[in-house]
Image 1 (tube, rainbow, N blue to C red):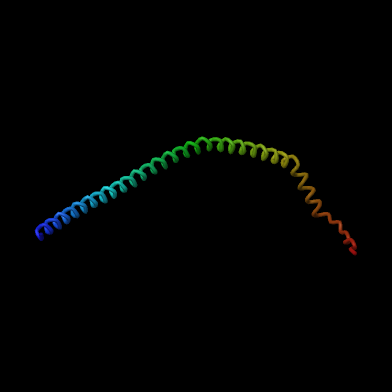
Image 2: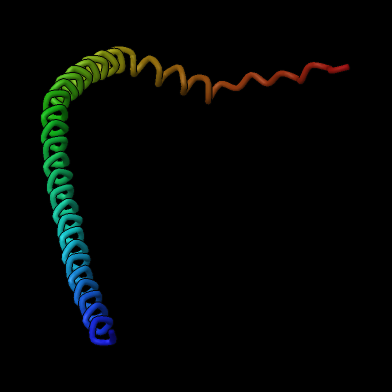
Length: 116
């Protein structure tokens, strides 16, 4: 009987080794699949990022031209107002200077009003 037991034990040990090999292969396969999935996900993320960057650049280009136009209009309006102010200053500048000099040079002292 010991030969049969020995043969049975040997068969069990062989089966266990075979099972360990199968488990090891399954682990390696799972690890490989996880790595592949990660690299594939990273690739998809990068593609998505590039797509969104291109969309943003297109959006920015489309809307920045509107900003340039608004900026140009604001510059034009500012130049017009400055022209008006300079024109008024040229017309009435000497009058204002004379009034300022008169106010500074002609002093009219008045006593302070009494407070209760």
